[in-house]
Length: 218
Image (cartoon, rainbow, N blue to C red; front, side, top):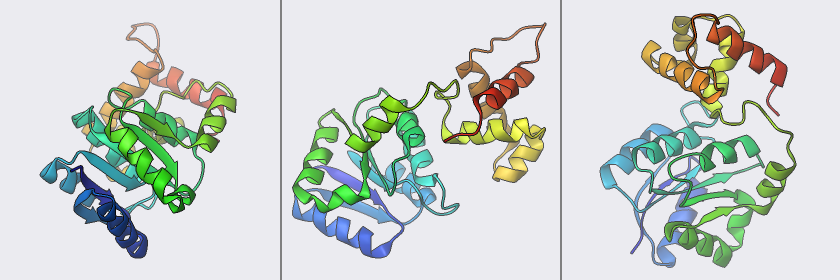
């Protein structure tokens, strides 16, 4: 039996998904309503599958996605399916870049009403496959090349704050994280943008210039 941790902040939808998964033979070991609770539940129960909404408390932004990516970093083989209200290609790209690139699903919530298809998608992901909603695939294929595409949503946010001239300390205060976490994000940004250490250039300035040339995220 596939063990599942479910994260959805809308109580009625969460309970409905629990009933649906149970009906089709999944064992829901935890059903939670926030990203921190998702992290705790997944680390405690070590499930086979995580199903989560993207927009979750506490910030109501991409907390669920960031939790999923963090869990994949800890367990690259963990099966994760994220549910989204809208097509957001950058979120799909961040998830697809996580872990080993397998056992990933990015589905629109509208598709959940197709019960048999939804359950088949979950089973495909658990079995090692990758399932991405067709609308998301079309958006990914037709979006212009983005020099910031490799950055996660959080890394983009940090880079945006760098472009505003904020220090690591100011960014940490703004995002309610530690300075060490900001430093790690900045290091990841510089690496992903191919800005290798050099005595002759200020890599932070080059990263900001790359951000400004790319324009605002779509």
